[in-house]
Image 1 (cartoon, rainbow, N blue to C red):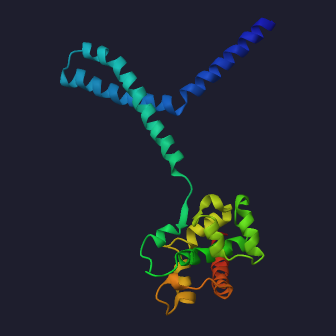
Image 2 (image 1 turned 30 degrees about the vertical axis):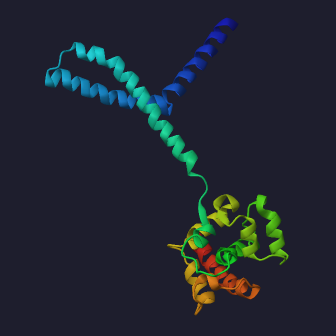
Length: 223
């Protein structure tokens, strides 16, 4: 009786393993490609008039080619997901290596994003690995621009908490978001460019109030 139970358990395990293999993405893709090639071969033999021995000769090759093609497509998909990496919201080098005013101090390329970084810090949306500089900002020992410089002038999704990522993706998008419009309306005004805005707490408090309004409106839309 015990032997029978052990054998039945072994059969169930083998059946489960077989089902998992059969349902794996690689096997399913291989089967799909093989059916496609088989359809083409059957059409060539029975509709076009190719010799039937061609069918038996090419079936094994079609199966091998299907498996290789399935592996290639699956591997490419895995690589695309792996390579994608974090979303980059801004880098200072995009600005000082781009259309940056001549003669202006490079530190000015950190100011506009630094203002938003400061707001993110005050709303506890910064990941724990970046808290050292964040705490200095909360104590008003350094500005948001200085925090941003300490982070090598890069703001990406890995540096933010989940809600910070979602809000930044909507509001801080330079093409479709509202941040630059708000920044220019409140702080740039008659200045030669957005890079001429001074890195002061007064300016930060002005843009902070506007971002607070945008954030509350954004939260209402999320409900």
